[in-house]
Length: 292
Image (cartoon, rainbow, N blue to C red; front, side):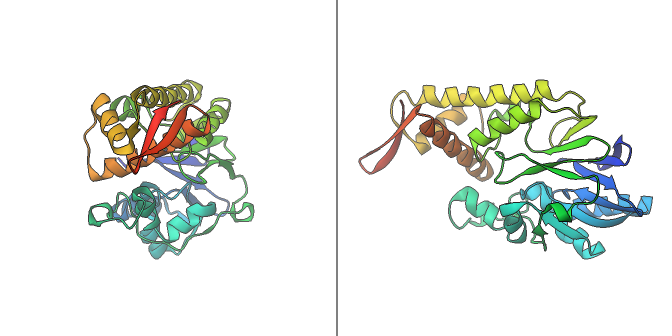
């Protein structure tokens, strides 16, 4: 773990729970694409930088989930590097309590205020075209989170952030986190048509041909949607639906799973309602969901 792997030319990735991109820049400096999950991840990245004599100039965050920005504060404090994040992700990076607050739908209780859902704050600036070094371009990849982006390097390596899950992960957990299902499906279709020397997803193995994995993710999203519709043949409140999904997929409820899967299921319900396949009704002061 935390091994430096060459992707192509001056483009690398650091093997870690959420892969970290590393790109060599003109003049001997480097930039990172994301920073890992916490201070310990930041220390391990710093060791790689020191071993190779590289100066960290900037971190480009793909999005603001804690496992992608957790090393920001340590690395910025150690190196003085700039940090950039796209759109609303920049606000979440500066104010990480927004992530568990958004997931829970209110102020998060203590069991949700930990490093897996809430990173340390860092001084991020908005990601703009002018902030990117020569040869690095941002690719919009919305859906998994608000304004997530990926990056393509001059070596034609594409870092895909969290827009894809591995087959193993989806087989185990079945429901991957999604903020906007319609946008996520469109992103997957876009990724499926991409060409690159190498694709580096954060939570799947690098691949030269990403289309089969993108299609597998599309199929899994559609399957979850169909399962929700099947379970809502009779009206269900959200908590009943969530319980039935956990039982159907043999998942174990925890505080983290409640907010992560729960938020995703609400996004599925919004998508199914907006596309006319789900109805919402109030009965005895309960919001119920029923297949249209």
